Image (cartoon, rainbow, N blue to C red; front, side, top):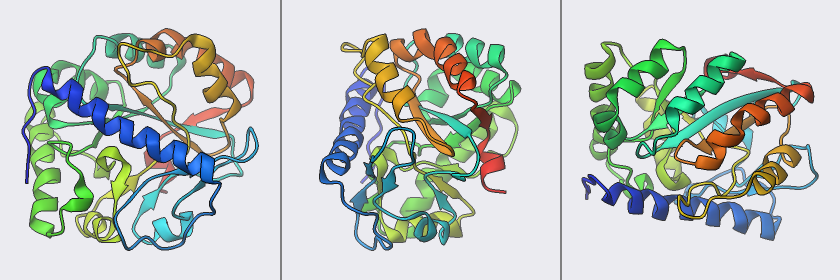
Length: 268
């Protein structure tokens, strides 16, 4: 089943979905369970953090994910950060975020949905023109793990691809992030068969409640203490806090010896 979400309804939908992401992260942190090597059933992406400054374990191992061209972290031997943003709608902060990225010469990946593409095509063009990656977060932002047939799965991704080409005149990079962090082994297989690389994350925090934003100190407590070599960082570009702290955050990460890479570099 597909749901077309327009206007203000996208806000409620995205908040509901990202709440599930947060729940999976919290659950993994509390349980401290070890990474699994297979994931045949539908599951939520989750992380288990150990020591500050060290990489967390995902609930699927890197070796398992790489069989399906999927990633949640880069090399632990390099102090490289891969910065990504998710956005289901434009909340007025993306221009500031893009300005800050340009100031620091940092290239990021923006995983967008169909609603964002339709409502903010000029920002999508700006992202591409300034060297950022626009990734596929699906057209309607459904729970993709519930889509068992390849035609339905493919439709969600290809509908987004078509709109991207209509806006930019280019073929889009085949980079995919599952909505809500929900996935199954069959999803990973189908994404790979369609030529996609799937990207989860190794660092995120609760930044999506637009009416209850974290403070600067709360954000830094998560983003500075938990940064680690090879981190794929997930932030939401709808966050006022993220827009306000990004300049200082990038400066602090650089002062700790981190550099910034792109998803193109990560998969090479």
